[in-house]
Length: 121
Image 1 (tube, rainbow, N blue to C red):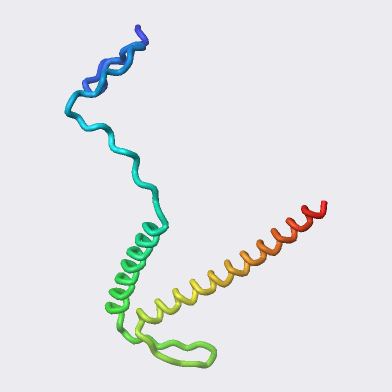
Image 2: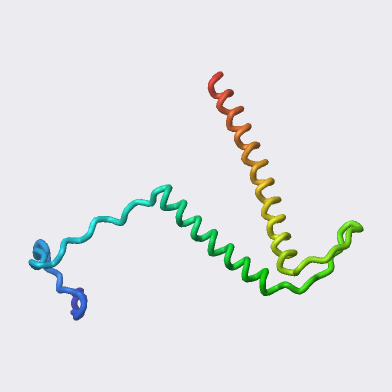
């Protein structure tokens, strides 16, 4: 039994310490690495993704136009179902943003306090 790997048609045989052969003439050299992500590129990507989400939401609202009755704390009203669900999602997103913002301010205040304490020592 040998420790050599079995020969495979899609893998070249090992050269045992010999340098790799030079590239064949006429073949292009490897292209440079992918361009780095820029802020402008990220902005365009975010805008495109935002517009795609907006289109999906508009289709959702257009297909769910059946009116639904709602009651909350004594108020009664009716809205198209798609608008009501979208409104609930937006309200949930705003609550999440408010909680995240409060936490960020809390962490910044603690970081400043720790920095001042470290400067005194």
